[in-house]
Image (cartoon, rainbow over all chains, first blue to last red; front, side, top):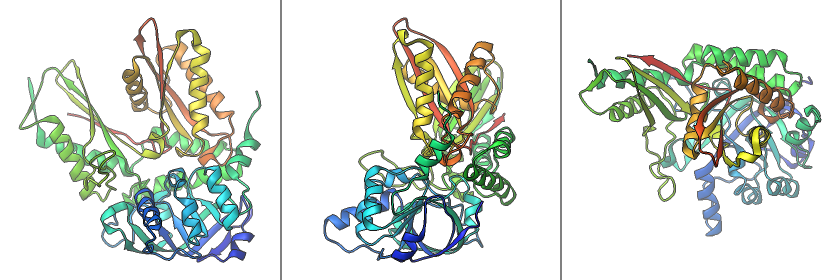
Length: 186
Length: 281
């Protein structure tokens, strides 16, 4: 397998365009956690014309709700959650300048179309490898919706967070191509 | 008549919750390691290697292997000659869950109302408790924390008897393949056939309590489990849905007699972090 590409956040349009479906990457920089409840609130805020608590211009959102940190640790276990539950909200977030999403599992056609339109990349992390992934998180701070507990928005500083470009900004999709390649015909 | 105090039940449930989150059963680990060794796809192997390393790190550091430490299902088999003293069984279990999730730094994932008020309960209660009365004077508690990524892929179909074995097979394979990368494959596929709608769903959960990969005692159903596993693994979904040969690790079927007019089939998937721990008091 090819060596992992280094990806530094926030993402520029050129970096997003350079990332291709199937690229192994190590992400370094700031990413924001956000999942069901936070997305729901943010999209409702946008509908009311309110300002979001975080400026997502060029940023990467990570669909994750970590376990609490044990004493002396930065964060608890912190793997990706199923991205499909955020499909209803993601196009609106991309309109806010979001450039990358990290999660697990396939996305809807509407999300992929919005990714192509807005030049956005979707990274897949390894679901269930949460203790391993926690090692790449160096700092963690709750920045919004503290009352949501595990669903609060956290600003994470990560180093060499391993993931795969699952859907690139041209809409090439590992969840379709990979499965097609290994499917055994009737 | 043997007496068992609720304090003992609480402390055992607490211990099992923490242990289940951090220490994958060896039977499941064996299947994962085998999948990692046999996977043909590069991305699939990459994913499985990370999963195997994660299991070891979680066990060594007593860290949850997955951040979704689940909603707790407790299967309780109560011997008819047991007398629970000092309080109610369900209260004792919920107290154990609460203490385990708070003191064990596990994620609290329950909300107090499913629709109108999705506020976090703060201590991961309540558990879902299934009790069965059995012979003897022992109390067996199995704690199975179940994550929602796999649980959301559950399927039930009330088949017509005319759809026959072919209909059963098609429904199960479609349920697993249709779930794609969402439930964190490779999964363990729990299948319940028979009874009525709720009985079939429950059987599909009970099937996941079995030792991972252990066949149904009925040779005909054991053969059906093997056939379904082969069929599912021809789909190409693979680890994490990236494409590959290992979409499921095992298919486990439980059955029950049913009505002349129906043939219920239920599928519950368990992610590769198929957690369960038990104790006998």
